[in-house]
Amino acid sequence: MTSPPGDNQDDRRDGGVAFLLAQLGAHAAAAFAERVRPLGLTPPQAGVLRRLGEVPGQSQRGLADALGMHAPRLVALIDELEDRGLVVRDRDIDDRRNYAISLTDEGRGTLAELARVAREHELAIVAALDDDDRSQLLVLLRRLAEEQGLTPGVHPGFRRMGRPG
Image 1 (tube, rainbow, N blue to C red):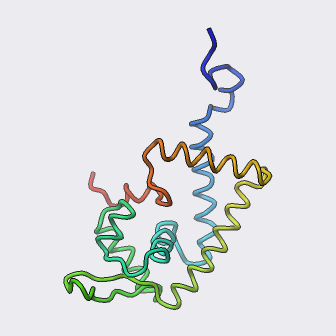
Image 2: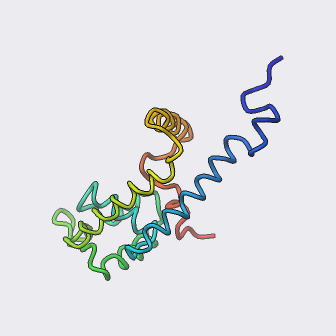
Image 3: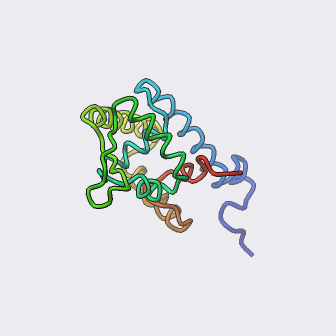
């Protein structure tokens, strides 16, 4: 009888696949936080800016739903970004009860800088891999993320932000 992949002692010495993914994820998240700090951003703020860059003019509710986060926590993030002049709230022309959130010129400039930092971060994280290895890893990670039901491009940490108890 053969052992399942990753079930022999040599494969488990470093904790196995799930542990390594968690270890690398925690390391990558901490390193990203350090990289965006000089921009005056937190990772959640960076995620909100990135999403607004992809889909401008979203309502606060639509943005919260897209990120899978608690709406009151999003309001606080938007307040912080608005105070910095990176986003603006405009009344939604289709529904005056809602606000459409958009990047300002300064917000678009910060987003461009954020994209540069994110590229540098990605290259640093996968520096040990050649182009073929990186492509293969990306395909495998996408397959795992899809099978786990993760939303592409949305960090699962948004779901925990500001959730009650």
